[in-house]
Length: 254
Image: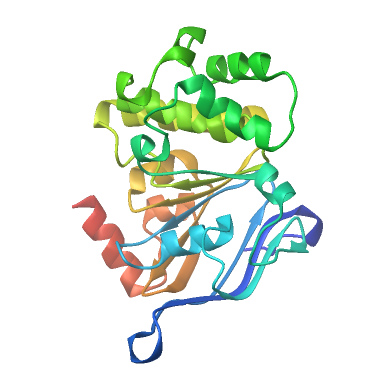
């Protein structure tokens, strides 16, 4: 694949390594991952459970600051403890929308909180606009998470991530906690939002159907290593170089 020109890079990881534990219990879970995403690109990081893909995502999001190597955003190296402007530009959508929303806060309060933290204006208008953008009416602002379906909760979680007008979304298995009948709706919404807002996506999943729907390029992780990268088209055709990738694809299709 052609290298991404420096001016077009949104995210770059250089020799990223992550370990957990201490002494004899210390375990390396991510080994020298090098990954570059272009602005406006949708990139899927796939692999079996425990391969390290979500750990990479959490380090990029600033949720794990104990790593070695380098993480760059818009060609600027980020410190392990991120600054406030970073979180305005890079937002995350978690796997379980019920766990990521405060159970005692109405939707409007969950959406207003990031606006207050980042000193943004026009709270009411922004809340109304983003609810409509994700396919929910204004009436949903007065509901609690337990009053919403799984798909509605994930729409609220996406709205909360988008209300700050970020340029990058980190997606951690965004449909795996949803009913099959709802998954396609959320994937269509994410695809629509990326096109309308020129967003960059880094998606973690083990579901090839999700990758095929959302991603242009794919990286396969195995035992903490980024084993290979290929285009989504090559992935669909099964044109993998590594034996493990071919086995993973065959098992996923079985």
